[in-house]
Image 1: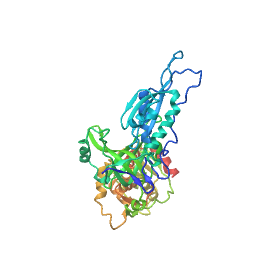
Image 2: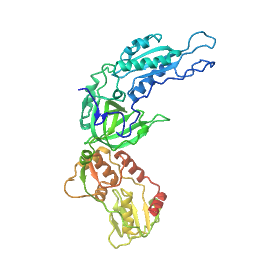
Image 3: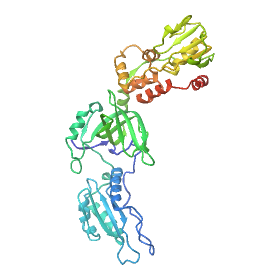
Image 4: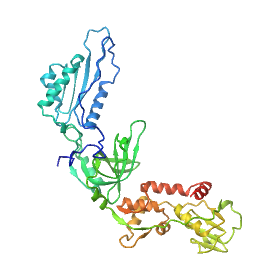
Length: 450
């Protein structure tokens, strides 16, 4: 099935919002380099004609208009030859390049040239530039080129859900190779796609838009080349894309090469598609007594009592005397807390200090393991989330994972949660890793500032 991707007002263009196009809809007129003034040297200082062909192709992609772009040919100052311009031409489906070059009003004023339906090239005396403009206008009128033709259009082959994208689908597309003129890569279209994360990447002036998209049962990476300036795009989008193989080390995965974006046309359905989830999450009380921090390896012996021992796989048998583990007892003030490891979040840390009111904190250098993205997703999928509210702090303590990482995973699995904004799950897990390695003095300062 081959169709134009369109909305209520017209065809799709590579734009994040219908009200804000990524590019102008068309050229107002044919433009070319200015003719050298009389008496000036005619040495060409512009681009090589091979480069302007690439530029012409990029302009067609961006504006959806036929493009004639030229560069001046080298002419010696003492030469009697007439200065010429070498043109590269790229067309659109409605504009046949070869027919335009053979059009009588143009063929009679140009030098050698040729091409096919989609591309061509020719040389032209500089003195005929205005005649070329007029000839092109006449050809466009004869071919009935309409303003509606002059905009970026994307031909869609099939509409799919992102959850259907797989390696087998990519392999099926590879069997259509070689792709090119007359046998284009298949173009897919998906609606109401949630953007999990996005980032402009690249060096210098060329930036690319990197996306992570919600498939409904996970996420998939996507790249939009040279679209970094349009970051951020809306949270819900309709996208047109091609399938590409992303190879990293010994792993091959499917990645989307995005060629068209617009804001999702059915935002109500996009929002309603999220499964609502109620969370139980209590902020920590105010800390009224700030302890002194010290590394456990440098702490005095014996440690003061009563003592609260806390941490992942803490070794209670190493500590004798008046020692409580994990949870402080109500209305009991502790001389010290030993953190075998830091708690899974800053909120947990605040709770422990506010409730225990210790004079000292002794921090060990042990670090709990960081779960993989897939393992955390599987843990969440194993939960019964239909009935009672989810006690986020308790679950975070049980799994030894930060609340924000759990919420990020829930959101990537399609759950709507009343919780502050989170990063991508990958970024949240990386943040956890940095949390467990935080400097002890910095941690003490952050606690007092909070």
